[in-house]
Image (cartoon, rainbow, N blue to C red):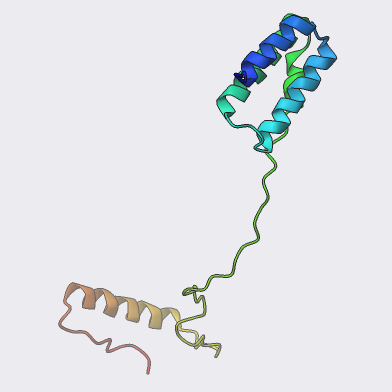
Length: 134
């Protein structure tokens, strides 16, 4: 005995039983639930049956937008995150954070240090800042 696929079964049901809009909508929701819960062997076949049901619903005067609005996202369980067993990111500072108050430099001191820095960058052999405060 040959078992018909879902599309063929839906087509035969629509032709032989002449269901009303409520019955077609109920069949559509049932098929959608089967797809979302993974209770179908061939998803493409089930989706083709859904398309046939929606098309028939529309052809018989039903509002397909209402029918399609009943679609629910697939019910998938979210697995809790497993703690990592490997190396983890260490976001701690690499050097101790200095919280001591810093000496404020005057404008002249800043200008001199900046000039020394510019001069050092032009000629790397000097390497020291003669005007930097100790």
